[in-house]
Length: 434
Image 1 (tube, rainbow, N blue to C red):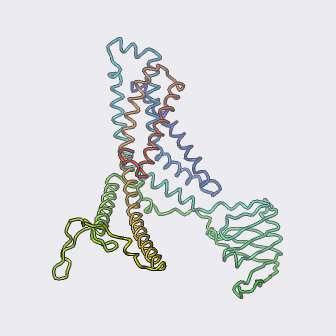
Image 2: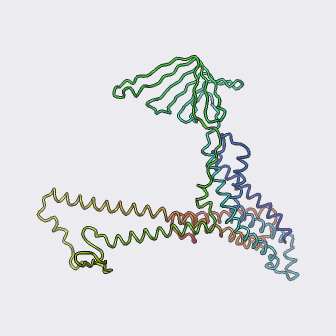
Image 3: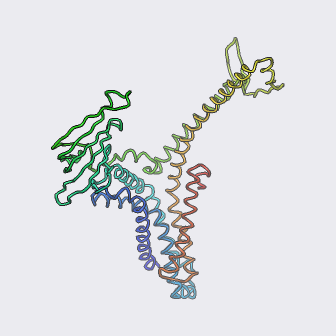
């Protein structure tokens, strides 16, 4: 059984991993293309991305391999021969059940020890690539706006010599009111040795510059015109690939193991509970519009304690008596004051709720990541006990029918898993339910 299962398992695992890795590539291809990144950096990103995709590829590989293994045995009547000799299906599955237990244990340690490191490095690399300036490839006949603070237009360029012809440069780095326009017949572009600045050498042109500082009250803004035969411009443009510090991502929920996640959940929950008690006590003790919720005890004019007895109004408050004999202006003034006080109270409570909402969201995200440490192991075991009996029933080997059934079951699993994750993240369900 192990000889039949293991080759299929490794084959299907790498196929599934390749498919989900291609999905990752198409999702983030805009952050990789046109940046001039080295092959080693891209290969490093793909390696860490492949590790982060293991939780998605492993259950599907288990399901597909178990379907194919028992489908092949059923198609060749080997299962029938086993049953005829007194070997039940459960007994024939026993070696694979032991293997799945080891796979589940390995998946747990992978989720807890390897995955946080891989996710930290992958997201750090990805964000670093997003921050990198695009590779400088000036097109012909259109404005190029990938240089911060500049728009560059080149009518024609000589790809052999690198000379640019009929240049138009809009410099808005100092603001649109202080824009500078440079026209040149030709020019050459290069980088400084440290690749932190762009060097432009322009020939035979003119420069127009607004002098907005000299007076903005008049309708006509003065400008300065300069003609040149040779002009050099130095533009700040960092073309290097700079890695971000991993510590920031390491402190996020994706970079923590079980003990670190639990410590964060406990600390944030303690803060939420203490703030909640403080807000609740304030609601009980602070009088609103002259009415207290609890009776207060005074001795010699000093408040000693708040008795936990809700105030019961024996007679209703006659609100209309407040407006009796008042002028329309005073009537409107009372209503305006009451409305403004109510709005201030509403804004105060909304602000407090936003503070606690962020903390509760942090708790949910960390709790979700904590639950994920265990869900992969359970998913592998459950998919095996779905795939093995189902393969024995359909009795179809190869990649045809098992692949179709595996894809259908995995899509169903992915939909309910993703829906539960979103509802748990938004607080509509308890995290363990999601």
